[in-house]
Image (cartoon, rainbow, N blue to C red; front, side):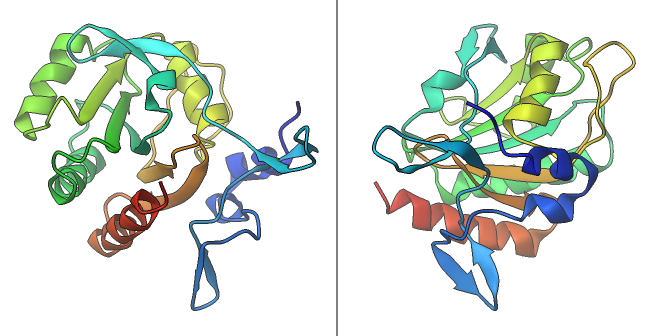
Length: 214
């Protein structure tokens, strides 16, 4: 099964990242909202349209436990990629994620996953300390570390973050201010500027919409 060539456009410009399918749930001022992103080149066994899904990988949580992306199936998931030593964009993004967490407190259908892009320094213990600084509820919000190659491939080819190409080696580095919203079926449904409170307001509204669909 081949991915659409749309990915190659996404790497070089975030504007292209919003060229999703026409199957939008809502259209606001001509802008697609909650479209299903990244249609595949092939169809399902019944001729239905297929879409990219988040790949299944195994990493490690802030509690030094195995974390599998497969465990997120059947959940609405908000994801970001950050690093704990970041003093600018990341704390602003994490504060916004805390706001989202509060909006959906104790909702078992909603999860937040924050993946480090600096796994060499961001051990499970470091992530655990960081999580506590932002009052993260570990039953709802997971901070993840692990193999840099797996993390970077996940960011580039799983979540299609608009970043430069790279191999995940020691010289490679990824940083993005984007939150990625994923639905019950592991389909990407939206990208949001994680430092913009107005964008996060829209994100919260979109999460509510997706939660009603199950």
